[in-house]
Amino acid sequence: MSRAVGNFGKQIATQLRNAGTPGPKRPTTVFLTHVKWVTGKDQLTKYFSKYGQIDKVTMFFDPETGLHRGFASITFWEPSSAAAAIQQRPHFVDGDRVDVELFVPLKSKKKSLEFAV
Image 1 (cartoon, rainbow, N blue to C red):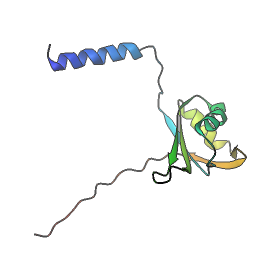
Image 2 (image 1 turned 180 degrees about the vertical axis):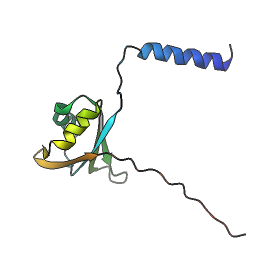
Image 3 (image 1 turned 60 degrees about the vertical axis):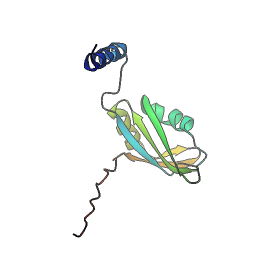
């Protein structure tokens, strides 16, 4: 069996396995700021799940200290859930105000190197 046929078979098997599994139509992510360092994924999930089904919660940590940086992102399954979370302010999690806005990913810029010849 050729490698291409083997890979195609794996793709079909994966599609069949996932056929009954609903996935996000258009994942919509919100960005959270001013998150307390003691707040975890469970607290954010519990609070923001009232706006709709959550696909993923991401917490951002300082790589050197390992401490939470006060930022997080939440991906909802439905764009309307993210819109509701943004519109219905203010938000208080663990007793402190948390700001919510639409997540806009930073695009990585290619750095070009020029050498004099």
